[in-house]
Amino acid sequence: MNAFTPTLNLNALKRKQKGITKQFGGIVVPYYTLKTEGQEGAPVKIDTTQVDTIVLLPAGEGDKCFGFLTQNVIDDANFGQLQGYHFANDTRARPGEPVGVLTGQGYCSTINYKGVVSKGGRVYFDPADYKLTATVIADNELNAIFDEDADAAANDSLYDTTAYQKSVRIRFNFDLTV
Image 1 (cartoon, rainbow, N blue to C red):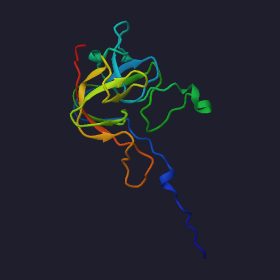
Image 2: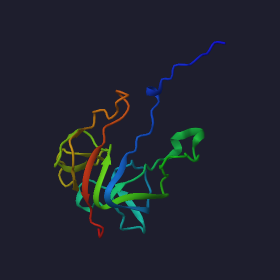
Image 3: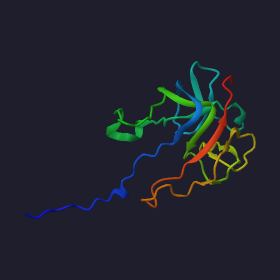
Image 4: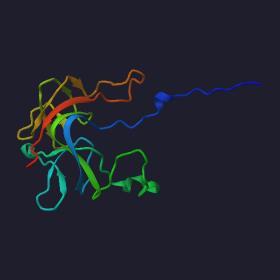
């Protein structure tokens, strides 16, 4: 009897990499809604015109940041046949559904950043793509600092040389009374 074992190209399979992970401290508030698309780890503020609603942080309002999105908010119109389907083991939500916001004071790891960052550097956000950066952008400074050195282009996997972005630890202190 001949046995056949197919070659498994597991490195070609791309697993979903979590965009933000709460490490220590902080509070995940799970009941705000976001009416637009937003990516995990994007900074948000409370929408003062609607109850229990948040909006992506506009340019120049870094001091009003309430926290980071803890899940992707997607418009599934791009999913074709799979539009409206439930995606098991995934935290994505659709616009208008409840989402989580990581707020308060604590530490988190995120892949929602760009460029090279260094420990102790201030955290800014780029309103063009809502990614965190160490590049100074006027009035877009968040009440957070990078807590380790990292490069967004660096690899975080010992097995795959292209798949996973290195996450960076951030220390944050957001005002809960905004």
